[in-house]
Image (tube, rainbow, N blue to C red; front, top):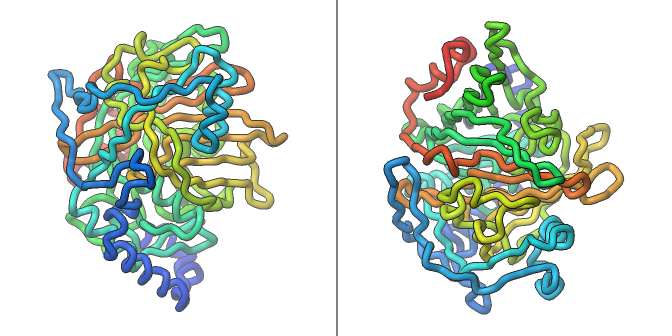
Length: 453
């Protein structure tokens, strides 16, 4: 059994109850399902769909090359749309469109979806597949889904049985071992005025994916993130550090912030949940990053099932465009975004008793080949569809990996949208192997020494 973070010791004896016979049988079934050959090593359906519009997964990495700025090429640039969806023909697509996508089509006449041939390009390192097989026989939930145990080095539940297992797959999906990039954040108002609100350097390190280690040595800290703001000038020099844990029951996240004018590092517990992100003009909250991030203690997540849906995918081409080419007046430019038909897991979160969040209900659409949310919908306390999100997948066949990077949140009530982690005008994404010596740069003590490189 994996060691948890030392500050969890107080509840260790009470929380770690021996797995029941049923749960052990379930884990055994998961291993058998992966070994059957019907699933990919990530838990997706290996076969094509009935009409072949979703092809079979062949497990072959799609080569990508880097330009002088570190940007990856679009390997599918020669593809042409096979279908265009507008408000006029949206009804004919049935349940292949999310509620949020339908709302955007109805709200903005210039919004459309160009659907391209489906490319199942998501392939990951063999070392991850080996760990996922192990996780299928050992990983389990505790504390009503808020704690994950005995998982390491890969998605923990390749054959999910409930919503919390699926959300843990999303949270712990592979995004590299060490990742660095510079990106922009834009807010476009309801009148169509675009504002650059933030340029930042982001550095991420994932101890959960230190594949030179083992499940027995994993201490429960799954990710560290360090962000340094360089623009606008009024915010330049600000820095943020977060550490996330696999225990949402007693200690989900630590956060520190450095403000140059104060010349001190302060603990920042508010950088979580539905606290508004000030750089998004109220359109997005801190838990909207990657369409959902953070603790699960405010929601009960239910696994609705799997659907074939039109979702953004393989969007290297979007990230190669200038920001003027990528963004439209009310949404991203229709000819900049690639949509494809894929199978997704639909997960719905409703508030737990006694808990609050401005999004009373959330629905996430998790791509079966990556386990990452590619679409999201949120409803307010009155049950009105309020926000919808889109996340755009970068294909890095040179690693290999496929991961969402840039994402957009649209306010369906007040209008306007934000586009974050935009690398359109800043360069590419750098990946590196895990190196424990890098962890010293991800500490509160190091935060005041400067931004990320």
